[in-house]
Length: 362
Image (tube, rainbow, N blue to C red; front, top):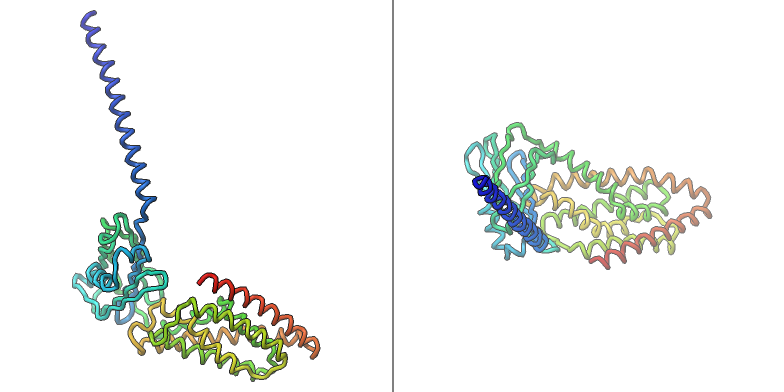
């Protein structure tokens, strides 16, 4: 009995010790999780973007850092060094070096770097990025490898512990005709989804009376915005969006007011040419985001011509739909003037709203 009693007492003591040990470890674990959560809430580790575009004769790589991460890097020179040190590409085991590096910043303080690599013979592309290890702990990087038409081949989230992706690019080509079609469709899509540009055109078209005037007016708009679009994409003319966007809204207000003061007009090519120069600066953002112009004027010609052709097709399609409706609604001279006046008031109201909104948001 005595032996049994001595055996039972340590067992009970051991259980209490185990419970106490588990409770203390649980407390430490909870404290650790809470502390980690506080650290995460206090500091966002950040997310960068790495876009790799496989083109027929070159590989284009764009690294983008948001304002907070860019502030950690420091100057543009430091960022330029980071892009060249942290990014390594190889084809079939042979390292390739960038032939051109372009660095720029955006209005929010973000930094962007574009590196161009000559595409040599090879099928297995390896992209290694150590950007995450140079930034805040926990930083991640979204890597996208795309074909010339924009189709995603590989998309992976990288971090300090996983910084390399490999893919087969032997079947990835891309003829010039494919690029031309892509930018043609992009131009059509951009004009059909650009409500401010469409409203500007509708405000201009509502007072025209012949198809000759319609074609002249729309073509003048296309010619004008192609000029500033080319200058902007090549970096010869850079105007901040906070200036361009309010000016586009102001152009809408202007055509509405002019309609009320001069309800019967012929070709308005002078008006659309003048404001087309402003709208072209708005279009430039689309092509700059796609990297058009980074290789000089030669790389701009095909995308610019195709994009402008797409915009012209989109504008003419809109005109073919709107103009007959406008003419039908104004079959009599007096009703035509009244409809044009009512439409112009709506144009002025929408343009004024956008103008105030864009000035306030700039």
